[in-house]
Length: 305
Figure 1 (cartoon, rainbow, N blue to C red):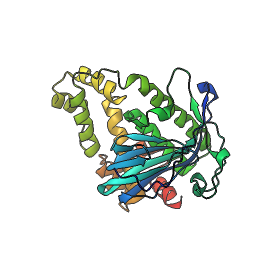
Figure 2 (cartoon, rainbow, N blue to C red; figure 1 turned 120 degrees about the vertical axis):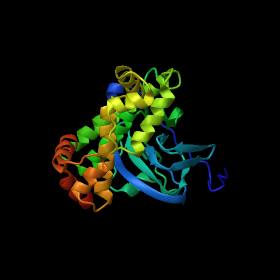
Figure 3 (cartoon, rainbow, N blue to C red; figure 1 turned 30 degrees about the vertical axis):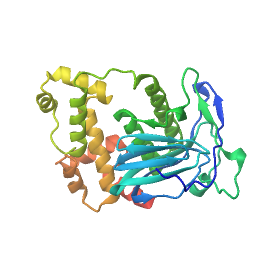
């Protein structure tokens, strides 16, 4: 891959061995983004970014490497590292971006304050990466395959940061600590964990559920399609997904409902049907139970913010 766009080396690395109980992350930005095919300008950031690809495919070009980010994967971009993001898929790719620091050391007023002006570099502003004893730095791996439960936490963090209900900063901090903990844990478990014998089949059915969340995904149907005993299917599914099948289906339905409420003008009843709930009252009730506000209020808030 041609990285000739990099004008000069740029790598400011500050790390600190710190007990996890001393981590106090601060979230500066957390949003969904949809970007068209193409390559973006080179940039350097003062903080750290978790870049999760929900749909499509992207590539991040560093000076010494290019990392492909398929759908369902997450890239950690460290502070002070020159990089270019590229969308490979057509017509676009859907991302979630979370900018943060580990020790609440940056005061960010505008989104633009996250990006380094290479004509006015402030060396002291680069965020410090926390390193937990017994673990490699999170930036040493960069590309992660987060579990569905981790992705659910990422979605919840964006929801909190976007809607900003009372206490959202505390909730965002707790969610990010949970996410970082799961990523640290995956360093020790993901590459060495032997997946279940039926792991590939479970992954296939998880992909089908993601594509068609409105279908009737009962435990009986899943057990039949996987040719397993129902109790055994639930056990294996939970091992792969980090949650039981019913919770996984509900997570994907709610994720799609939030997207449709943000991005379309369909009625609440239509959106409920599209995600698998044909009773508008039931859909509104479980949406409110999950999100804290009813669907109509969620839509109104998302468009104000």
